[in-house]
Image 1 (cartoon, rainbow, N blue to C red):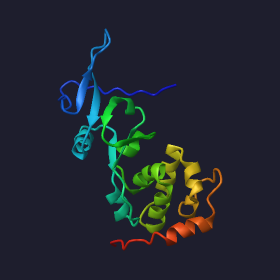
Image 2: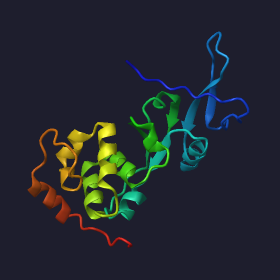
Image 3: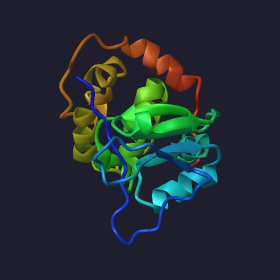
Image 4: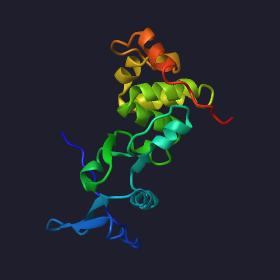
Length: 189
């Protein structure tokens, strides 16, 4: 089974910018025009977000600002049903199950996105920001994405106790070693 999303313009709406969207030939009898999208710059992501499309860019600046110094190329997170509509992207595209997480992502959503690509960084960001987020919201996001096994691997239950244990966690000594060798940055209050 395959989930597929189409993007249609409602009556009275302006079409998406031609530099980002290409109309797809419509099958006979279909009155609406569908589009395929190209994302080449961070500005393209911002323009698509302003149009209400499910795309979010995660940059290393966010991870560093939340206490874990790290550098990586920006990652484009999009709804898994919208992924086939992205025919060209300069960024690595990571699918997300829950389209609601892409509407106005906050700390719990970005940590969940980070968990998909760097589990140790997600753990470090959570442990270094205790008290600055709602653990129940992180729990909900992890469950919605089906990331319980990855969360267990890096023992996120230490920070989000409601998470179920699924699979085998890494030894606590190994996680402590990683934490010792990646000292936290001074966070602003």
